[in-house]
Image (cartoon, rainbow, N blue to C red; front, top):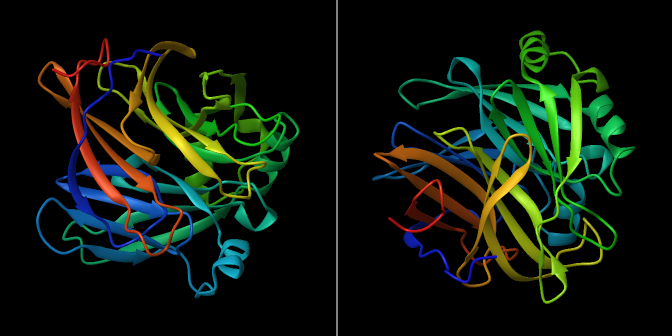
Length: 295
C-alpha cells in the first residue's frame, strides 16, 4: 500500500452510530445503519430526515439489539431513482432486502421487502462465513462485497446479473442462486497481521469500482473487534486492484460514495463507531481517480 495517506475533511456527525452504507443524491446523503430499522437522510445544510425500512422496534440492550437486527449493511442506487438496502446474510434473520422510493420533496418514502434467503444460502456454500457488507451497480452487474473478517475468512466480489435482479425487484420476488454470475476472492493485505476486509463499494465515474476496507481484529463475522485502520481501494474490471491508500486514524469506514468533480472524483465516507454513544462521522475528500492521490 502507498505510504501517502489520504486527507479527509469532516462534514458533520450523524444522528446514528453504526453507519454502514452511503448513497449521495441531489445534495442529500442517504445512510443505513446496521443496528437500525430506518433509512437516514442528511442534507448538505439543514436537519436530517428518517424513513422506516420495516415495521417494529429493536431492543435497546446492546446484545439483544445485535441479535435481533436485520443488519442492513449495504445501500446502493437503483432504477427509477430508488435505493436498495440489503441485509448481510450473516444470520438467518439478516436475509432481507428492501426497495426504497423516496418522494421528490423528501417528505416520505415507500418501502417493500423481498427475501434474499435462497441467494444467501447459495453464497454461504462458496465462502467460509457469509457476511455481505457492500453493494454497487457496476457495468452490467450488481456487485456484492463479501467482507473477509474473522479467522480463515476472505474478502470476495460477487457479480449478479443486474437485469435479472431488476426483474426480481420489480416482481418483489425472492432472489435466488440463478442471479450469480461469478465470485472472485480478493486479497487486500493487512495491518500488523490483521487482514483488510471489504466493507463497501461505489461505482466511479470513469468505470472503476471504489472500495473501503477495514482491518478489524475479530475472531468471526459476529463479534466486533479493534479496528487497526481502514483503506480506500480502486478495482478495475474484473477485479484488479489498481491502487490502495491508507485512511487516517482508526475509523472503521463502512460507507463510500464517489461522484465526478471535473477531472477528479469527490469521495464521501462514513464510519461505524461500534459504540452507540459515539456518533458516526461523515467525511469528504477529492482525489485523482487514476492514482488515488489528492488533487
